[in-house]
Length: 93
Image 1: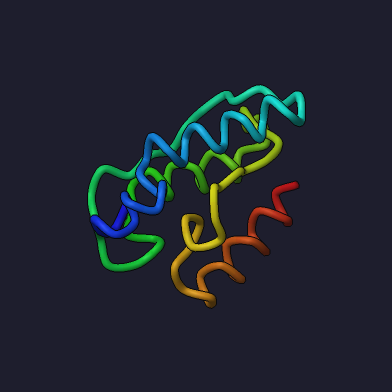
Image 2 (image 1 turned 120 degrees about the vertical axis):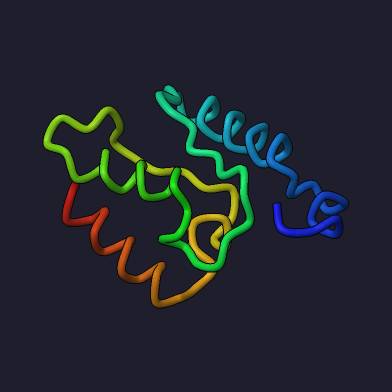
């Protein structure tokens, strides 16, 4: 969550988790991990939990088949990063 304004619009971390949990429940998907950033940092790949998620996705025995984010900008704030990491995740399967 980047601001008080986001909290007012139900974009707080608990609200995002609730939306994702409901989405996965509706799809019949099991959530095996949550990658939650505690800090506000400069760019997508500065986030430790994001890096952890990407590292796990690269493993041949990764513990998940999909990545779910509540909104587009929750996955990546920069379009270039979004394109790069989406392509990387697609390559990983």
